[in-house]
Length: 418
Image 1 (cartoon, one colour):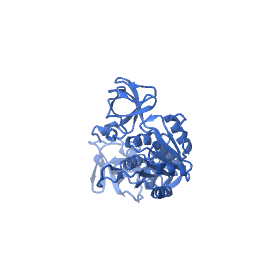
Image 2 (tube, one colour):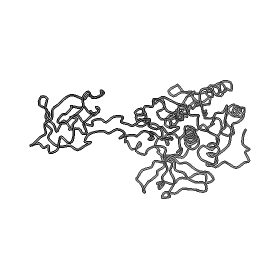
Image 3 (cartoon, helix red, strand yellow):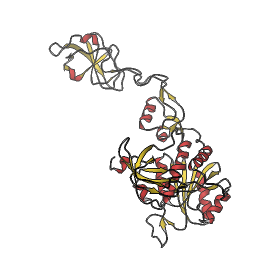
Image 4 (cartoon, one colour):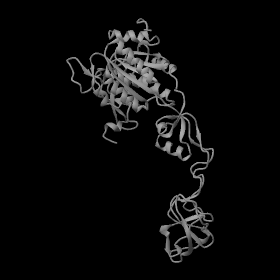
């Protein structure tokens, strides 16, 4: 259903509210730890037992009784009788009694009777005897039971995105699989007779498809699973088949091109036939023409064709929706306030999103536009790390004005830092 052209433009905020009110988190699934990497944990995971489950040594040395070491010095060492070994991965075969010691490896279980470890650096072994050169108190170099987690403690809380540390601690707690919000599978389709694959020989008037690659990278960065369907020309039968394929294999569908005024009647006809897709304009630059709706219960986004419009539309509308679907509590980019270093002009009736490079430090951020505002100049995005938001009603944002900036990548990545 196409919005009546006489109606006012939607604000960015209203368009965002409509989308977020429509999309829902994906059903929770239980995934093996490796497949759960990058997903958001759906419920608290608690420890079923103490971790560590047994006292162990934090040093190579000798398991001893602290009472036996009283007064030990380099000049007057305490000599103990070695009665065995405690290798890692095996229960100790002997117990430590008065005047005895057991050699122990780092991580090995502490034998019964011992209450501390004398590190090997402070011991001299000669035959079956061990001289300890200093005294150690009870518990020295012993990792106690439950030092990391106690039974019933929360191992990882719901809402946490699972990275390497989380996978490790979950495995230590004996969980081979956990309940998570799965990654969203997103089908991406570019439309238009003028598009060719990168590297293909271009006829006059043809251009490389950049939108699907931009979206693929952005989707992967957000933790989604991008499914690139490639390019479909302005053929209604092929376009319908591609949309059907994407809807069958994905949770979300994105198409770029064909939603602007005067563009591609075939695309508009297909969007109208889908029944629940609404085409409208948002009071923003770039990226005013948009389409959104639900098809077969799945969110469907129709984006304009210009590459910067695609990038900005993704940042404002699609990325927050996908993060919401994947169970994230925070779905917005980091923001900061910066001082403009150049004037930014544009239509005053629209919110403008200027590509800028942010430099400086806390309290003294600066934002410099990375090029002209035209929506086909994608290199201006690759040189930028943020979008300066110029609110409606501002004819010209002047150099020296403070602006709100949405950071879409770490500024250090543009400074050659790892």
